[in-house]
Structure formats: structure tokens, C-alpha cells
Length: 192
Image (cartoon, one colour):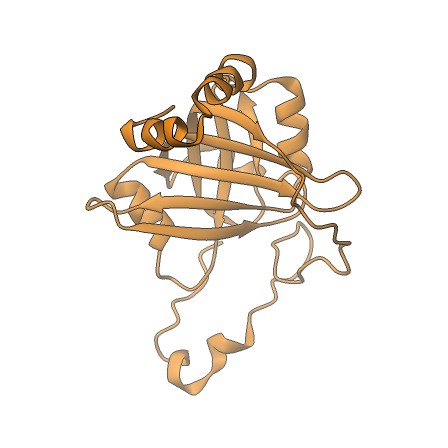
């Protein structure tokens, strides 16, 4: 869990014993039933990736509850939906499979869960049919799963779910920017 930079700062602040105890008591490499339920309940998470040279990128991933799920104690899956076509996160995963995911809720009981592991992008995964609108599926094998203290998480209430999330039986809503003159001639047709 820790490299020398972490250890040096833990020693400077006197927190090495606390860091070690947190790892001993909270860190795991397999998802629990509680982890799976929490992950299935979220409407978004943040995905950290890095390219082959280690340059980082952080992305918001969102959907209706259940769009990201624990498929097995050692497997988390989420869909890739039609987007801006840049493939920053998925391209990074193809070049460097190490990922960090941060799940967070801000409603009644704020909560955070971190998942660090390795990922791969699959374009023909049999599970894709379970995710409405998926154009690819990302499979994450966890190395480190651990909760974070929620004390600084503000409380917010959901006002409206995004109309752009793919939903079974509903027509897809295209974002207006895809029709702007500066982009319209290069927007590829939707695959899913």
C-alpha cells in the first residue's frame, strides 16, 4: 500500500503506526457483500488512470444505480457509454492497466470507498448485454479495497438524474454539442 514517499511523510507526521493499523484492519483485496451493495447503489464514481509515461487523468463515470457492479469478489465491471470519442480513460487503461476508483455518496449517510487495481477494456464481453447502451466493458481486478473517512463530504440531494444515461426502452438523447457546426461533420454514428 505504501511507497517510500508515503513512508517518509508518515514518519514526518508520526502517523506510520496509524497508517499500518488502518491497512491491517480495513484494507482487503476482495469485495464484501457490503462493498457490492454500496457500489451498486452509486450514481457516479471517479476513475483515475495514467498513460504509459505515468501522466495522470481523472474521469467522472456516471449512470443509474447498478451501472457499476461487483460481479465476483475479485471483479468489478462498468460500461463505457458513447461520449466525446477521446477515449482518455480507456486509452490509458490499454497503455497502463493500473487504476484507482473512488466511490462516494453525499446524500443521507456520506460514504467513500477506494478501489485500486488493474483494469482491461473488453469490446465483446458477454456481460455487455446487461448494460444498456454499453459500447465496451471495463473489468477491474482489485488489489486494494479500503474505506475512507467521510467527515469532509458535504451533503447534497439529487435533483434530477441525467437524461443522457442510456435506459432500456427509452430513446437516446444526444447532447447538443454533437450538432454544433464545428463538430457535426466528425461525430461518428452511435454504435450502441
